[in-house]
Image 1 (cartoon, rainbow, N blue to C red):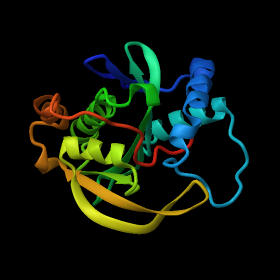
Image 2 (cartoon, rainbow, N blue to C red):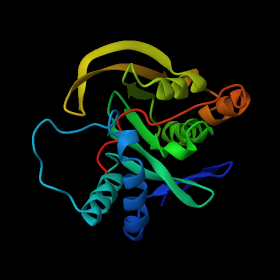
Image 3 (cartoon, rainbow, N blue to C red):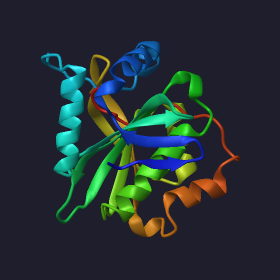
Image 4 (cartoon, rainbow, N blue to C red):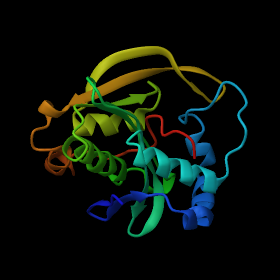
Length: 205
């Protein structure tokens, strides 16, 4: 089981016993997340929380995706996903994340992305990471700015979100651009920035 920690922020796999706390956290943040979370353009059958956790574990075992909860000082605070993980000649993945509205601006999201990014580069041996963000999502744009992701341009009508296909900007890093690691880069720049929020496409749940 992968557990990653830095300065009170902890990433760990989602557990079956998180169901009640997870439901409460989602309910508190439903309006905060609606404009940014990926949705399906066609109706899909509902997935139970237990089914979602089980599928997340299967994907992790197959090295297809990683789903983490974000904890702050021991309390559930959000989610981060690394999905899909593509090996072969690409060796890359996309990172999506969200943090509870009451914790926005405390550096939680960039810390979580830095932790996951370093794990992907060093432990999984990935070469490229990307984050896709709606141009209107100013808070999340600041997260990738803080971590030094490159802006690779606009993808027209890239993901279905909140009832329609939405444009996204793609930000990326390859391993050679952060030889000392993302976390070390964030430690150097932290304190000079403020404000972060939900971003990327964190997937279901």
